[in-house]
Image (cartoon, rainbow, N blue to C red; front, side, top):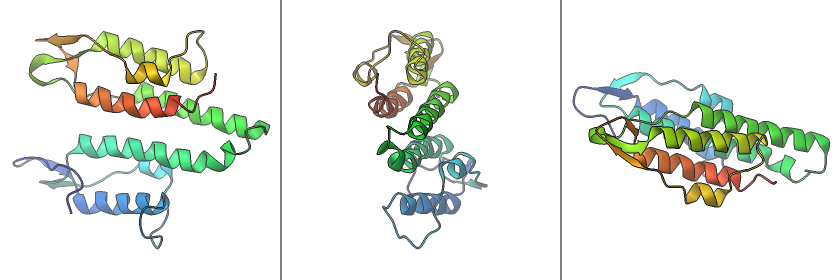
Length: 183
């Protein structure tokens, strides 16, 4: 089964068998697959490495999917805490989760746009800074999930820019996170 696009030609990508095995464990942990597989934690997914194999899975596609799975695993792990938000430890754990999401935004790296085009990097970076401040609760002007979903950026030609699809996909996942942030 091909879960991800494969690299072309003589290039190497992630070993499909290793990736598929991890994805199977993730799906089982999230309740979407056979429960006989060993559960996996978000930290294990974050630190996962795969051997290189000629004609393997495209690394960027796998990495983006794993980032989304990390969010899903963290959300699932925090679900019992969210039922008890009145407890001081519940709020503390919730804030730690939002801090981890802020760190995720700070770490994101987008591929360059194709043929010298893409979103204006400075505009995207400034918007991401606002999202980080919102997730950390350090701004008087928090960004809403709606603003993230409706965000628009200038496009550039013949200079470096971020791949539009990568930015849009990442912002969509962050909008879901922001919907859980209370003012």
